[in-house]
Amino acid sequence: MNAEDIRTRFAELRAKGMRHKDAAAAMGLSEGAAIAAHTGAHDKALRATRLKGSWVELLQALELCGPVLALTRNETTVHEKTGVYEKVSGTDAMGLAVGEVIDLRLFFSRWHAGFAVSEAAANAGVPPSLSLQFFSPQGVAVHKIFVRDATDRDAFQSVIDTYTALDAPVQFVPAEKKALPRDDAAIDAAALADAWRGMQDSHEFFGLLNKFDVERQQSFRLTEGEFTQRAETGALRELLLEASFDGTPIMVFVGSPGCIQIHSGPVVRIEPMEMHGMQWLNVLDSGFNLHLREDRIASVWIVQKPTSDGIVTSVEAFDGEGELMAMFFGARKPGVPERTEWRQIVAKLSRLTTSEAPAR
Image (cartoon, rainbow, N blue to C red):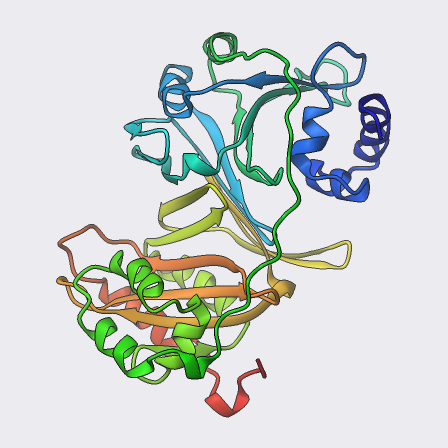
């Protein structure tokens, strides 16, 4: 399809209510490729302008824009936070945003292309949506930033003007086939467990996975009973409803190929919803929204990691492809032990026995 054909078909699918990602997929394209086709001069409702880095400097410039909506998602889960981009730092490869509300871990080495995207509203009198959208080399959205009512639109446009790039073609590549984990028998499970016992910081876990060349859920299986337990797929709903009921502040992590976005605080309005045959588990709070495909949950693990502050417990959900959907923790700061209230919530979650576990 040429660019004009993509724009025409994309507009038709958007008119039917399809999301950008789904409209692109219906055309056999990555979302990044579909957005890139909307650069240059044309008469369609969606217009895109290519952006240039440095990405860390661009994000730093957003602080003057006031509150915006930060969105990070994967195939099954969408995480949205409304706040100000503060305390952004980093290099060309990676960075952080650790503001009061917007809390991000940024992997800029996976940010291949960025666009300013404007899309006219269907209703007259409503201003067009305006956003910054960033994509991986495979055209997968890694992070998006949307204007909200409280955003300084002039400052936001100034950021776009400053970081506008030449409309050179953007090339995306097909996604690589996911590598299969090594056989369990090839992993030194005893050494893995010993290294796990020796952790002093939960962040050491990523190094542990690399050291033993073990896939995340595989590490859970190999240490099951000591550090990990399986929970029922309905455990996330139990967790969110219980946290909402008693007001326990939690942390919710959702990652894309290039960003991990974090909510820290209470959750209040928990709304399960069925839409178009899909079951969504939603948090619909002021400043924080979570949309998770509950029908796509294939496994849930309760995971304990030793740290210098004591045991830190996470609840982690995976889809049928083995991809991490979301992680949940009790809200805490370094140097502070895990909340008793969080442990009480986790203790109530419905478990699976090993015999009930789904076959690999």
